[in-house]
Image 1 (cartoon, rainbow, N blue to C red):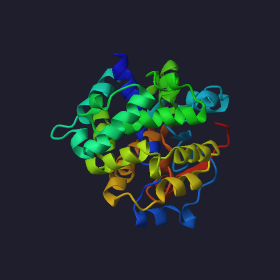
Image 2 (cartoon, one colour; image 1 turned 180 degrees about the vertical axis):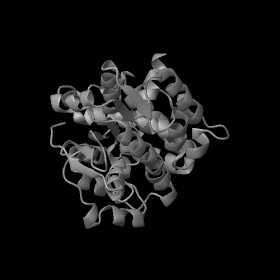
Image 3 (cartoon, rainbow, N blue to C red; image 1 turned 135 degrees about the vertical axis):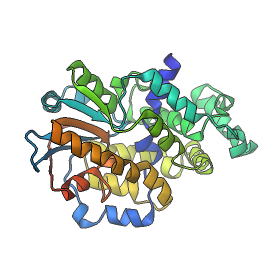
Image 4 (cartoon, one colour; image 1 turned 90 degrees about the horizontal axis):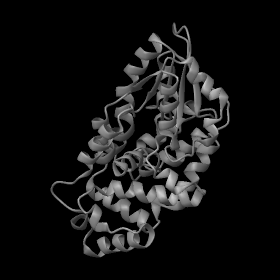
Length: 319
């Protein structure tokens, strides 16, 4: 059971690490245009257009420690005022989450060794043996994205001085997304997922091709490019500053992500979520917590809400 919980918790970290610094050239330009500049905040209030009580939108970072948020009475009061806590997926059935993820994670027609070749596979094995005390053979049938997540968590924990055991424990309260849902459930709020775990597993683990995932795995092993330790530290720095503009530039302005990958990981999911969000905020006040990169740009939730006539204003608070 513990193994499945750990894998499920790792699964939630993909968005802000695995796709950091990547986006197609045309999308990157539009994301940083002047009319899309946002105030420094990851916490937003949604009102107007006939809404009787405001709803709230919080942009999370899946590798950011939630300790200060757990003691933030301002944020907790907004959850108390809401009727439901809404996330990318509902995390109330962790076994189902784990099993759905594992089903997608296993490769049917190839192996990690086939993808990498013997030399690189041995390089990965040496890295894992030295840094994580495990063999690459354990992951030979799993998509490289699984290893990318595990290595990312270990690296970011070390660099930011986080408790690695806590991060890897499978305790959802150690991540912002999980904490919001757990706290909401303790207040007997409804917990709503914007997409099924099966859909998210397919999107996040298959959003990049296997050769691209293999390339990203070698980047993180060699500490280069988009998967470097310095990149992860910078991402956390911008998030801690609640600087969505820099987060967007840093997270989305690189030209090495294919348009179909960006569409699968961000745009298409936002487009599916928005009709649900419109319906929910008209029915009752809700607290939405999704990855911060879903908030930014012309495809982001903030721009789409404003385009529909809603007032979306930043709320200033520490995180």
